[in-house]
Length: 172
Image (tube, rainbow, N blue to C red; front, side):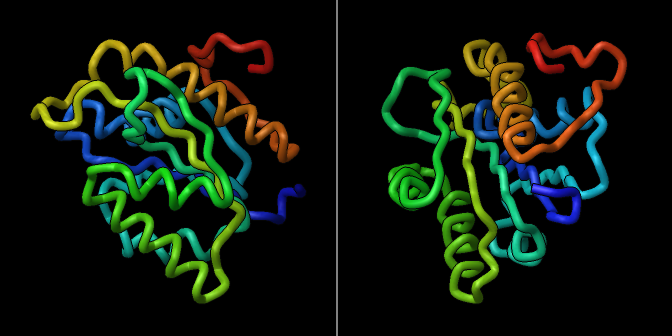
């Protein structure tokens, strides 16, 4: 991939409900710790659903970060792409994910769906009103960031840590 192709790193979720906001928390850390080339957009998508369609449609590659309920052990990290995406999103009990699936399907209908990878984590708690993720989820933020960086590296994207980068990985 060259630098003319646009990449969107999109965090989605609701930061008011503990682990439900993990996508946003990861996006915040990426912005704090790394500098990316101009063809990379890092976006806090919150729970915007269909409102994200115009952002998604203008990119060639999409990396989504979110909590994904899959009846697994809290803290389990998933990497989903292609046909896996709708199946996994249909089992989640979150309204924003229903909206997000509709957004992806709408982009596909107008032939504007970028190649998409979802990096998700099994939440422990998405119902408690709290601005902080639970400990098992918070402990995985650096691991999720490393997976995003590996996705970018596989696309030939170079990035720079800001300060110490605060992530322990071999490629940073």
